[in-house]
Image (cartoon, rainbow, N blue to C red; front, side, top):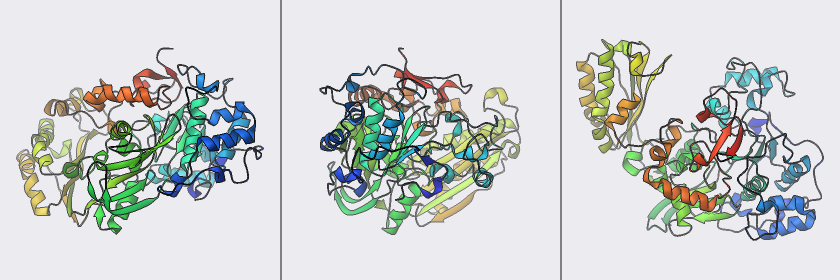
Length: 560
């Protein structure tokens, strides 16, 4: 893997002298290499490594910032009051260049100083380049442009819309906004651990970006240090895997940076399938699975979180491997760190740590029929008929779900918010983006949808369904809530101003999740606007965007 991903030549490393005397020419040679993990996971930060760092640096004010959280240490850093606002650029406590350079050296030159993706289009930025600007602007609405960038996110409103491509920018200026100040382009567990310890010990805001395909604004934060896990791309197939929960069968281990499209292709090459999202750019091991992970196969096999047999996390988990807020790498499964394993499968991203890999069930390949169509208010004889056509979908919703299907639809308006006070508008549309029927033929799918189609026909609504059969699968708001009471909300695509979001996103599990958050992340190192523990922090900003969307300000405890 290159030290700087090829698509991201608009970002640059730190300038100025490096602290080459901190470690030997190859700092990673100090890291032990166990044999049961992906290569990226065998390079770990340990107490022995930290002792070697201290010995080489011979300056506790520098070496202590990389230490694990330890209530028994004599380090003054570990005794800092966690109930204070996060340190920001310009503050007296903001790390000096010497510390950033030391971090970059220990990372093996993987620290990136943020330059917004669109900065090439603004004369005030040294990176200005008209040709590159034209290329970026032409692809601005293409997901991969943002997925492959270390800082950009797919929905810039959560960043503050402070540096949009020319032509998309309502201010015609480019500022850093709530993009992170620095990014760790992580390719090993040790690099993640160093970033976690550095941010925690210096009271910096820490964010994590996998792909940035995020509808909750969890991948950005003003003044933050960001961990980019996009390049954890390893894969391994186990034809006969025995899990701690009793599962015996085929399984696949994916690095957390593997995207859904890559997972589908790998599974297809093995003659199996996996539960993943509809959008192929989503990172399988990021906020997608942590947030539950809905899938076209969910009605048959459950959510993506239900497929996880183990994880690696910092903390590190087996079946899921994970780095915790204290900087330690642990395994998690139904028998090892089981409380963390439970929390990681549905509590959402940016909660207690960073996942580096996960093991999921490999499932049989299924023939699948997909239906797409749409109709607008102009395809109906009147407004009431339009809404009755949508209501008929919900009337048959339970039958559709019981048949194992998946519907991904939109009810929208091109210019106005949907609501009864706009009932006379001609802007409304209903779009069935994809109605997926696993293990069903076209004829069977038509028969299932017939009761709904009959209502549309009786209402004289014009629609043209399009059917596609493949060998394998590669609101009206208050009205929906009234028809499906206590159905909750899918946190990864929910309304950020959802009333009582703890109940809507987490339900009866929230008290237990909150208790685990306090246990494993007592200083609230990990924070996101809708994450577990979000009620304990607030982003203080003067940005005109709605508060609930906003990361463009200083993160502080609500009690201060």
